[in-house]
Image 1 (cartoon, rainbow, N blue to C red):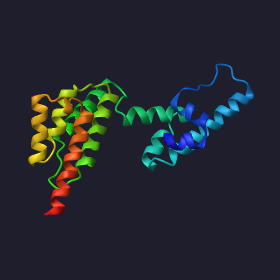
Image 2 (cartoon, helix red, strand yellow):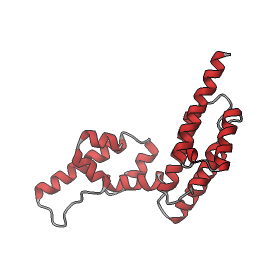
Image 3 (cartoon, rainbow, N blue to C red):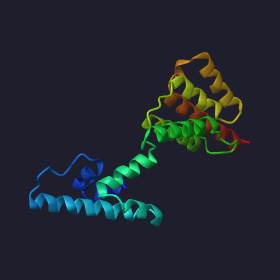
Image 4 (cartoon, one colour):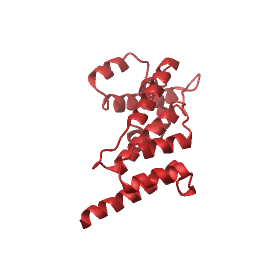
Length: 183
């Protein structure tokens, strides 16, 4: 929705993000512009959500309140209890993630990185060493990925960040695919 708002109108986007607010005593033209942005934001939101969610959102004051509600709900930041549950769920998903033997390694690693980013969004930091371990332990067992796990265990500088682990895992996956094509 953010992309659609940016594409439609830069002021609509700044209103959506909460960077632009209505002045305390607006003049008529300011109020009219504000109402137009709120209407545009509501239109954008209602065209993007289902009927049930739309009915819930109709109870809110304006488009900015609707956007804030959606962000809090789907980013898991509505309250401390929701945030704690979201952290637990995301961490469990990250720990349980496993790439199938013939699965897309790159897609799997992107999924894990997205989960890691969402964890940061809800305020949970994960040590790089722990995340690197999760990344390599989620890969299928084969000679190259086992070697990558060994690199991590010995603390090699070529895999001392999650980004380096991802890059090397993708490289090893491409080499594995090339080997299979040659057979």
